[in-house]
Length: 424
Image (cartoon, rainbow, N blue to C red; front, side, top):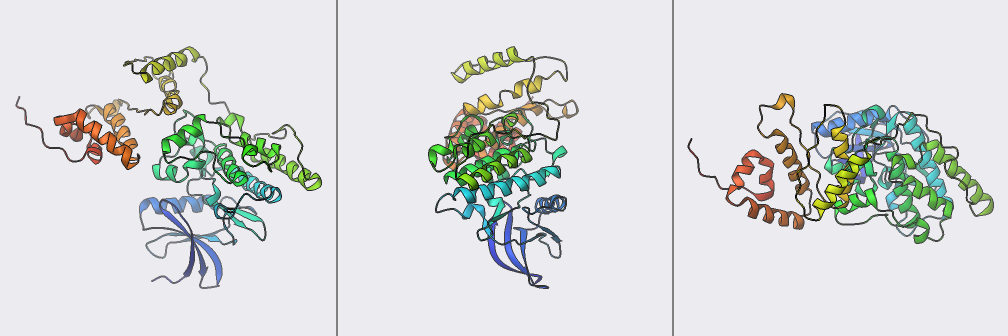
């Protein structure tokens, strides 16, 4: 039995990892331990990835990395313990005063500045991943489980568990319903949601239905923070709303630009107890070449797709074929439908007939339908029961035909009776 550390208190539980406050026995040093529920390849890989990232970045507002421990079957990430508690637990009684808010916001911007300068996208900014020490008024950023180096971060979350855990804070592009890749500006959106909650005492979007929250991130503009808390200066409210812009191009383009605006707010508040109006982002200069992620010259094609989809959404049945040589952008064009389909609470399913998978009949259909089953399995039980009944009625005696083709469907409709054997 390993007795190198004495666990003192559990700080945070996620889908697969737990953060503990502990004491290192050898030198009585307070540490944070991040452990998995049990040893498996995914947990070990997550901890190794987080260790690699944390060893590449350091700063006053980033939790210190001490190493990893593989002495037993449960790998652990060892971090310095700065004290304090998750920011999510610190202001349950009400929003902080403006001095405290600006102090926290400035440190958060400084932490992101260091992270982005190291070429890292955090990808999981939320109040659970900031430790706040009330006496020192100091925050530390942690929780790099979903982080990655920028060149690798081109896709939205591939893990439903990770997405669900952070759903109130994910950016529109992180939902995977926006035909846009994910870059470091996703952190600004999540930081904006964190500031919104901190300043108003409530999240911008709340629902028991995950699809409704996804839709809100994509299409709904939340109430201005100043309408929920009249104590918030209008300029701070504008900063929060800029951070939460739906498209990355409309947000801050650098953490340094955000920091400078917050520094001006803090200076004016200290001197005058008020903050004047000024143009946001005046000193916002991105250090990276960012090409806008837009389709060019396809306005008529997109308009045609949207028109046909509007008819289908009203009950029409349509087969639409799009042809063209390989590489001309057929997939990019079709993916422009991600957002409008999600806004109408529809499902976007896709499959591809691949040159080297011709040995599997109906390969693209299996891909698309398997995606549909995966979406159903994330639904609440009440909604899943409605789908189960509808599918059982529609498939009738042919359910086994479909579960043989698509084994995951059995998780939705249950085992199906065999169908009669047919001779030649």
